[in-house]
Length: 148
Image (tube, rainbow, N blue to C red; front, top):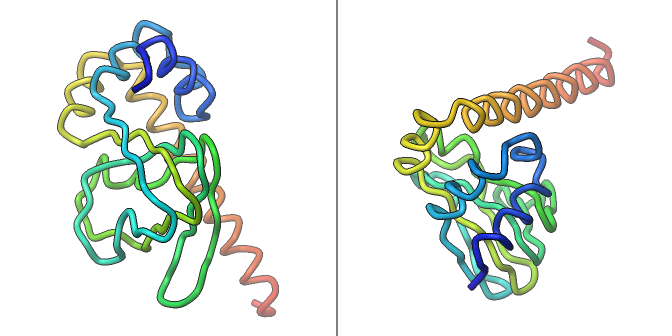
């Protein structure tokens, strides 16, 4: 079990929260739960409804679509961030490649924190905008490769 100070230090090292004040991160640390996942276990399944975001504290996971591994994520990476804002079905399965420790952040307490702490809401918006920008760039590169 991590202390509040340890959680704040870990959160501060995650891009999403790098500019969030320490006192807001301390509040955030109170609503985070720690989840230990053994190697080989699925963390989330494609198609299932989601309402939690995860931060990889240590370990490594695979982002899987069908039988294909489309990405791997390691320490301080975030996944499931869309589920904090939208409870649509998960778009991929996430599987632990090795024993992994996660911080889980659930939608309802996160909404409450965002309503009290604008800097948390702004960090979330900035992360989502960055992710969208990266996806648009990928689409444009693929379009160019296809001769479009």
